Image (tube, rainbow, N blue to C red; front, side):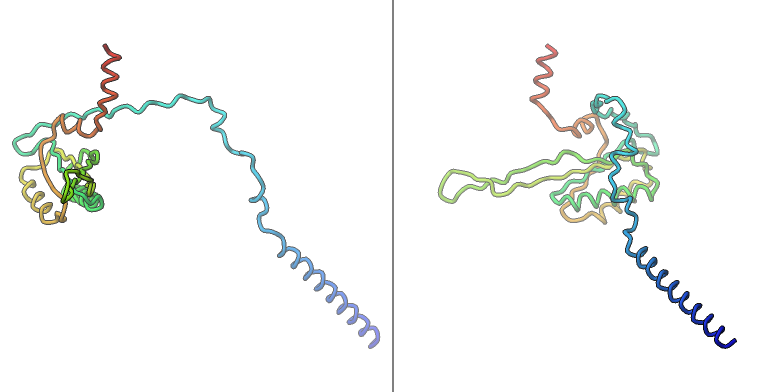
Length: 202
C-alpha cells in the first residue's frame, strides 16, 4: 500500500509540473503579443462619406448688413460706441474684454464688439547734414469698439467712472453716438476695386 501511495504521489507531482510549465508557456506567449494590432491596420477611408456628395459651389461671403440705430429716450441713451485705441494690442484687447465683462455684470446690453482696421504711421527723420529723410519707426494703432444699446442715464456716470479708474496707460478711451459713418469705417477702403466697379456700371 505504501508503494502504491508513493507512485500516485509521483504521478500527481509530475502532472502538476507539466501543467505549470504549459501554463507559464502560454502566459509568456500572450504577454508578448502586440496590443490592439487592428489600430495599425489601414482603414482605406472607412466611414468617410462626404466625397460621395456632389460638390457645391462656394458661397460668396456677403457684407454684414447694418443694424438699425437706436434713438435716445428720456431715461436711456441710444446706440453708443465705446472706442479704444492704442499702440499695444495686448493692452487694448484686454481692456476691451474688461469692458465687455463689466457690461455683462451691470446688465448693460452689448450689441457688438469688433475691431477696426489697423492704422500704420511712419515716423520720418531727417539727417543732420542733408535733406533726405528716412523711416525711423512704424507705429501701428489698434482700435476696438464695444457698442452698447439703451444705456440707463442714471447708470452712465457710474459706468464711466469705473472705466476711467481702470483705464490702462497708453490706451485712449472715447464714447460717442453710433452713426452710419462708424459702420462704414469698419471696412477697409479699396479704391481700385471701386473704380473698376464704377467703370463696369457705366
